Every structure is written in C-alpha cells, then in structure tokens.
Length: 101
Image (cartoon, rainbow, N blue to C red; front, side):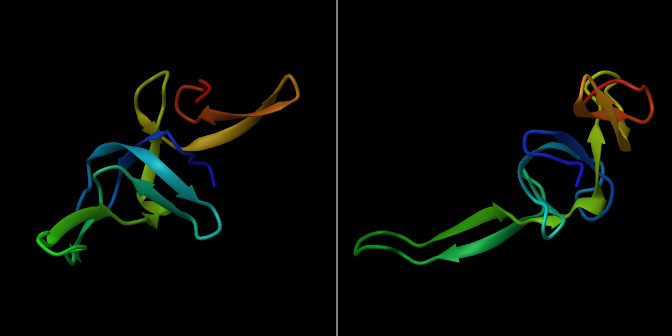
C-alpha cells in the first residue's frame, strides 16, 4: 500500500468526492485508510453516569485506499505513486512530476 499516515490525499469517489484531507491511520492488511473529517458516521453514546447526557458523535470510518489519490508535496497535484531506489533507500515518487513524496 502506497498511502501512509500523515499523507495528504484527495478523495476521488463517494459522497466526499473532491475533498482533500489528512490520513489519520492506514490499515495495510485490509487496504483501508482512515481520513480526517471524511466518511463520517453517527454513533449514539449512552450516558456514562447519573446526571450525564447522552451524545451523538460523528466519527470517521475507514474506507478503501482505491478511493484516494496522494497529493504530491512538490507539484501539489493528486497523482499516482511509484517507487524508486535512491542511495539504497526505497522512495515514493510522483508519477506526474517525478518529485519525491
């Protein structure tokens, strides 16, 4: 999986199409990502103690990594990602501008 925690991504499909946001967590085994303020679901929380009120929380839910594109740090455009070995290290490379991401 080529998307990591902390990356800026563009949502390319679904109800949040067109939004740009930060990846909070990546799940490589399931090929899913958790993105900040995207794909929100409502969760009803019961009161914990007497006198406390219940709440309706909006939490982000993981979705498929196929629905996002990495936004390049160099050119600022969403693009596909490739790999290149530089000085014995594997580096992610933007397919549009060739810059390291």
